[in-house]
Length: 558
Image 1 (spheres, rainbow, N blue to C red):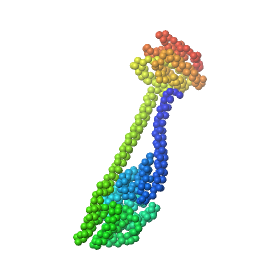
Image 2 (tube, one colour):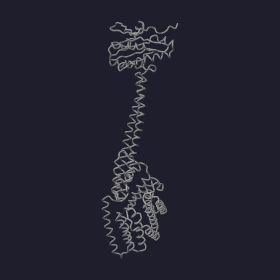
Image 3 (cartoon, rainbow, N blue to C red):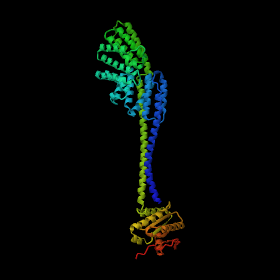
Image 4 (spheres, rainbow, N blue to C red):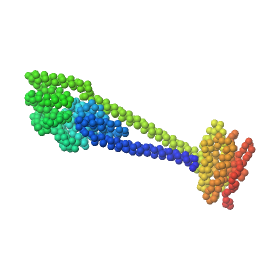
């Protein structure tokens, strides 16, 4: 294969290889990522199937989930799934310190994967926590933020709908939108039967919670007696002395009923009944650390108790003092509103890390793309520049490139020799067989010469059928030998119509002008019968040995 054909084909191969390599890399990486993600999901599903979801199984369930976060190449969807379960465990166990360390991660990855249900569910849990500790404004801010992700009614997960409507109803009561609050409570009651697949206790639990919200709505509307009657009815229907009161059923069901009873009793000046209801309410608050809720109700009770009940007022004041100190301690231990700062810190760190990672990836991607573009541009420039140096027909270097190279060699005073060759009787060949055949001969002869090219041997089309070969840093004897080798190759070429061609060669070297000397020696070779190499040494003319005796191969057409 010809030298320049190899170079050009290699260049094209490199270009296509770069494209193929880029596409292949993306395909292989995507396939690898999908394989690893699929394997990770098997491990995650296996761990989830072993979860017990009981209060006394908190450590067991947590030990199953936390190691999953160390799996390599987890997708953001899988991270969202794991941290959602982890935060649910923390919340159910009342471990709010750990909850706010992990809820930021769960929320971050849920947002990143556009998982609306999970995002709203997590916001609902946080809002409910702040409602429990009397951080109503924080809860309302969270609810409004959750609403920006979509309509609560369109959540596909029933538990998500129920949880968000529980806190959403509190917000609606706060802004006195009683009609929409009632619709939210009704939605909870309607969805309650759908939760049986999660737990047989869920339907009744959520149904009574929804009805408790309706009773609170009546109270907020000033319908104190109707609220009280409904609270008593709910207590009679759903309360179970044997039931273990947890953080959730206390806040969602029992506390609202005792609160309504206390307010009803104050409204009717039945102060002892109000104190008893407040005590039951306070016990639930103590058990579940809803201290601020307890202080709030006691404060209202103290305002409305008559001065004659000095003993009772004194006891209530002592209770508030003790609970205030407990509340102060809880603030120091970061168990209340300071948790929001922890949550925001985690979220901000994740966002910054994500942005940094994305920027790093963008920079690397930009570098790779730019390197690829620069490399491609250099390759294309090389191809174009190479083509500009070549003769279109023969693929030898052109006359302009020859002149440029000779100028460089002369300027740097480097030693070189030149061989000029001319096809014998080429005009007669063109006249006999046509110019198309003559072009075929020129291309074949050029291909034979190209086989002799190397680092210090370059061939140029001088004009017409004349070709110049430059030899750099080679002894004069080697130049003569290589010239004869090329001449013999030309003689051996066979063409159609049983045509063969010969060429005459002239060799020139320094000192002097090698190309001019080669031209003069070429004419001498022509005058001596053609198909021979002529050269001079010390001013004396010589002819190289002829190894093939082919003379005037063209047929006589006369």
